[in-house]
Amino acid sequence: MPESSRGLPGKRIVVTRAAAQADELDDLLQARGATPLAYPCIAIAPPEDTTLLDTAILELAAGAFAWLVLTSRNTVTVLAERLRHLRLSPQALRPRAVAAVGSATAAAAVLELGLAVDLTPSEFVAEALAAALLARMDPGDRVLLCQADIARPDLAQTLKAAGTAVTSVVAYRTVPGTGGIDLPAHLAARRIDAITFTSSSTVRNLLARLEAEGGDRAALQDICLACLGPVTAATARQLGLTVDVMPATHTIPALVDALDAYFAP
Image (cartoon, one colour):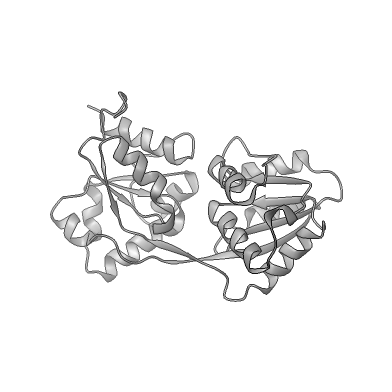
């Protein structure tokens, strides 16, 4: 266990990420002596109709786009799946440059697509990514933006307002998650120390699941609520929740560090 782990040993932390993407957070919490408790509040599904996404991928392979913009690890995973379906290798993709919203997405691009990322903003939010792109793009560059069905429109709108030719396609759908612990029972028994949220949809869906499963929203008042970034935190506050932890750097390791510091004696 790292010497810096003074606050997390013995803590029971709810992980609301999609089950397929919870490993990193689970592993980091366990390494600090905490117990991660799965309560998936989202799941990732491909678009109901993949025609537009597949067409964009084929155009990308044909060299139609100067920039490929990746807005999440989920985007990378779905692109890899569609490439296999289209019987294309990742090497078939031919953007002049690749931008990723954050370090985790950039790492996934290298691992799953073999694509080196040329641009990652200093702050891992859409507004910072838009500003960084506009500073780097050449006049006339075409941009392929792949994102979730519920993604905020800010990134595409900012690029288009600056005169950029943007093709925005839905890479995946975010749907409610299922399974995991009996959260209402755990809350009632005071067996939860913190709940982590990594996206706005995890916040909304947790509240929806909790209500549907007979839980008491008031029980969240005594729980540490930790949000990965400012957009997620803003959603939580808009829904009447108190955000106790938000790391300055919006990464999973930083979130775990911030939780450790919060609980440190």
